[in-house]
Length: 91
Image 1 (cartoon, rainbow, N blue to C red):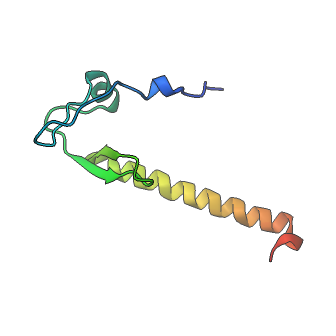
Image 2 (image 1 turned 90 degrees about the horizontal axis):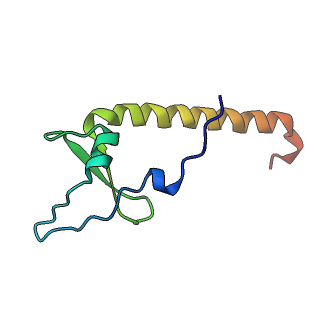
C-alpha cells in the first residue's frame, strides 16, 4: 500500500504568540490530531538545531524511544550489510 508523502500543510496549524507569562495556546486542530487534552503533561525539548521547542506527551515518550531504538538497529544492520557487500571499500 503506497501512501502519499505528507505536505507542509499537513503539519502546519497556524502561528501562536508567546504571552507575557511565557504561555502559548495550541491550536485546537493541532491538539486534536496530537491527542492532547486539558491536563495532559508535556515534555519540552529544544529542537536539535535550535529552531524552536518540540512538545511531546509524557505518555508517548516510550513509543518514540522504542521507535528510535528500532531505527538505530535497522541503520546498523544496513551498515553491516553494505560492508559485507563491498568489503573492499572498508577503510
